[in-house]
Image 1: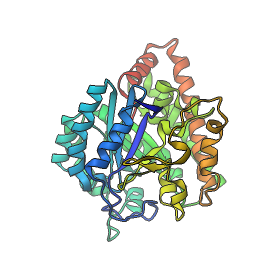
Image 2: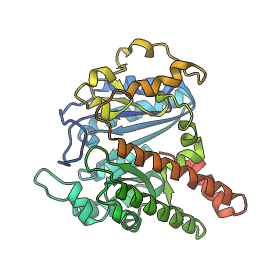
Image 3: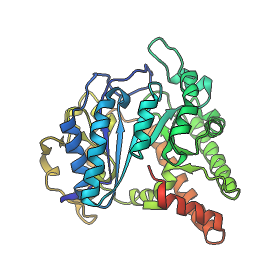
Image 4: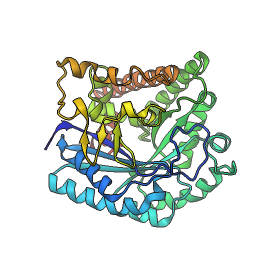
Length: 360
């Protein structure tokens, strides 16, 4: 048993991608993770303290290394069963390469599929495009019937990408994604691309509050729409914990194809990334991270996350502020839902759904 508690681990199984998005922070070095590195990452996750585990597979575009997914997932499932862990596995994709063979595998192994989208046709095609600036909306739209036929809605989500220039249409894009058939959303606040001005921040807050009101109204109609950060707060009090002292090993551990580990994909792609590498999954942790164990009273734990990223000169402070606003608004939304559940069975049923099956 590993002394650390690791609730989630993100594996970038390749840095290669089939898209040419201007805002992407991943350096396309065309690296691929091998099976040994994937298994060592899975072992690190499952042998750590705690029962509920989330294995997040992403890239680059992970479907470009689908062979590895087919090899690593059965291993993860068997190890989780052996170690009596509750494992949730997700694959985050741009969906352009998605085929029936992928969906068959995801369905067979109860893997949750997250599709990264911006919204309606104009915004999707502007920000998510192929090598020759060809838009992706039409390509993905044609795949949706096949996707919904194979993957149950409880296993299907959207990484809803938000830019300062699109928040004016945030509510419209959100409802467009609902009309496409999705009912599970995560907000992906894009950093280090466009400036999150005060006006964009105000529009984000206004649009977010309208979306929350829309979700609350729909709960009363028994039409359940789920926001991932709200789910995590209701089920695990993740936002509440992060407002105190949160160990970065709980949710922030990232592993890149070579096995190097860090607490942020942004830091792993910075020019001075070496100072942010905390170890290699194939050889262990470095320095003070070798034997550290979380203790909220310990000064090192209290300062760990702050010290780790404090000298990062490329941080997008305004985007981080929006992320903080988003967390606080999600915290308020979760409190509203819990309060309504005291007197309304539909809100209580909504919470039960989250606690039973929805958190990825």
